[in-house]
Image 1 (cartoon, rainbow, N blue to C red):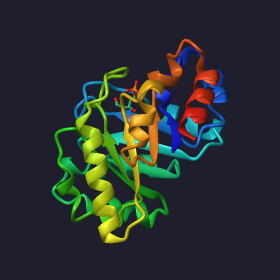
Image 2: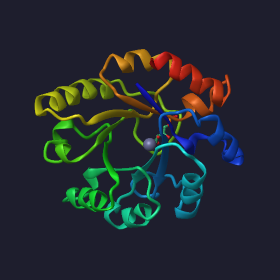
Image 3: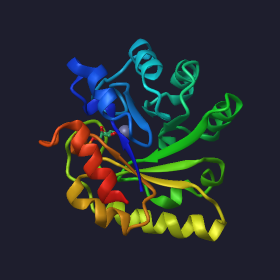
Image 4: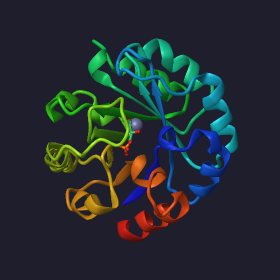
Length: 215
Ligand code: DX5
Ligand code: ZN
């Protein structure tokens, strides 16, 4: 199971050190929040560009925006490896998927706890990954909603039935203590924020512990 630290949870006063501490992760997860779709704000274009230029990890932008069609243009220019957006905010989410494919960027869709898996039926075959939110996005350090694990099993069945190889990612509420249970629910990768950056082991040792447990 792959590990993707969520850099919004890092000690931003020591961002460069924190990026170094997680340089052995499988990918870097950068949360972008517009203050509408979720009540918080995080990184703008300039800060995101600096993070992407500094880190050599595979990069994912998690675009929590109520206007992904408008905002995606700006983040595509930064050439991350993956852009993941929330389809429930659009009448036609495929318009964002086509823009990303045109730009040669891998596509991800993320669904909030209130959105059922069936809502993905018409788009899942067009994307590289699905993020199942383990929490209602917007705040760090929340408790994992167990219903998200049931969704993961349901999604894994659909992916198998359709013969797809879409990755299932769980984002939010992932801790060392629940990692094994998450793995047993067919999750391919986890986004981890406070579970790594606020761990009393320290960031680098916490990531090592996650990689060891996720084996
Ligand atoms: C939801 C974000 C997550 C969050 C994870 O707010 O999409 O990536 O930063 O933080 P933890 O792991 O602490 O729930
Ligand atoms: Zn996220």
